[in-house]
Length: 232
Image (cartoon, rainbow, N blue to C red; front, side):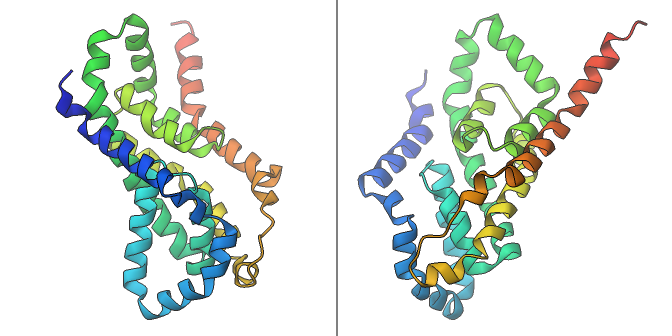
């Protein structure tokens, strides 16, 4: 393997290690956020455009480097910016960050895997690519799979950049707006420095509709299988 191909992944790895070494993830706690919430609100009022740019860059970096705490950021952005603005900013930023790590992984490892892979990987790639849009939407819609895993695996299965970008952009919309809508209602709690109750995020009322959307994405695959099994 060409060592130069490992540079993008090395950069991502170094970024993650640096974030962990400096305890960046510890800043994404409601205790720290509550202490600085008023200052953040004031900064947004005084530097609105710059605030949006910085928030976008922070979210892109958190996704690209797989830094723990993106869900807390989603709630915070919802509290600071409101549902529509925060949701739109996060969807775009998360898609960009996910695409960066996808491209890095594909550039670094795809050719090496292709050279060494046996028939099983080729068969998996072909099966996945035949229904790439449905599978990717399912993986993005159902909150049962770690986000960083779904960012990486398609790179090894030969998914096109266009399909990856589109399905990520569309697939993360429902979950993102669930988080920011909940976040938009916890601003008062954060202003008082208290920790909000987020048990609703794991409730059936939230998870079941997302799972149902994911299953809907698989209907085209089921239709193809039923149609393909019919006698000529």
